[in-house]
Length: 143
Image 1 (cartoon, one colour):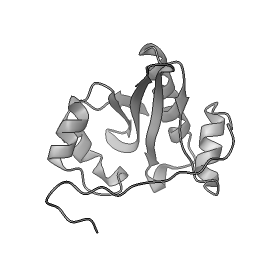
Image 2: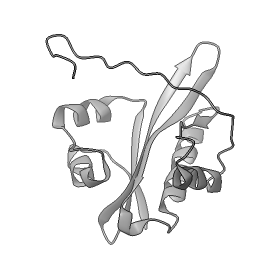
Image 3: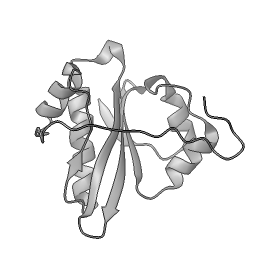
Image 4: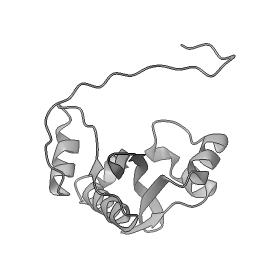
């Protein structure tokens, strides 16, 4: 297995089977153009089999930390340490960027994700509640 940083739209498009939906060119360009965004892709025999995305967040009184935004491993390649390796690679990248910490939100019943993050050194910081807002761009109706 090899883990590489995605730097091109073509790399994101080739890995879109690991996403929840297709990689859109406009959004891919914006993601790659944002200095605080990062995607690492795991390859086996040249094929993408896993990905992790991270977003740097900086606050005036907290400094910069990395949010592990999304982790995905192809179903046929799970339980081989790829998710753990991707999480550790993102943590190493966060360290190299000067982040003081890294965090991820996980559903409390997602045993596979909890085990992966635990194996990668993630510590339980307690339960929390997440609230979300569906925001539609101007001129587009929300569904």
